[in-house]
Image (cartoon, rainbow, N blue to C red; front, side, top):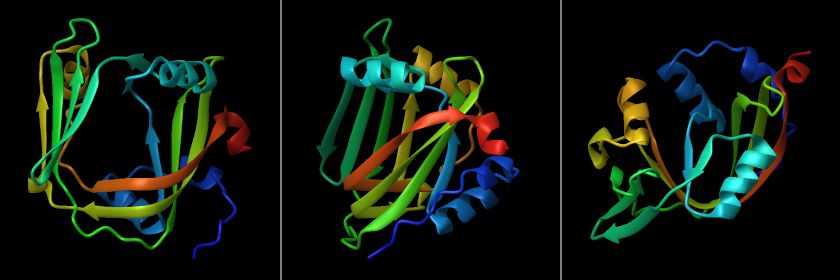
Length: 182
């Protein structure tokens, strides 16, 4: 069983991003940092809570998840046209760990006042698995707004695929980044 450790957010925001090296370090410490750029959701409640509570870039669109044999398929529609925009397929990870694990996911975004803000979630992953095989994942971009945005980022290869079908999570309210850096 893991004990909840104190959260010291100031160190991560001050560290340089060294790409894959940073990701490996975050993976080993189970303390992940990212910036929320775009976040499609499929319920109005999720959209409102994300926009009002966290000033996240959320919008409402159709999202379909299904299993096909040994794969999971996630399809996201373009919110403007309703047509299929993005398809993410991944092999099911068969060997799930039942050993609970605490993971922290932190994010930085623009707060309601226009200043940078940070927030984080601590999750107790009850069943989980991960994979670093890039051949087990497929991302097909369409011609909608989300696909266009992802293509403009010129992303590299996938580094890690994580599947967490059973978890408990607490999402903490964002605070101004400047306050954290003091």
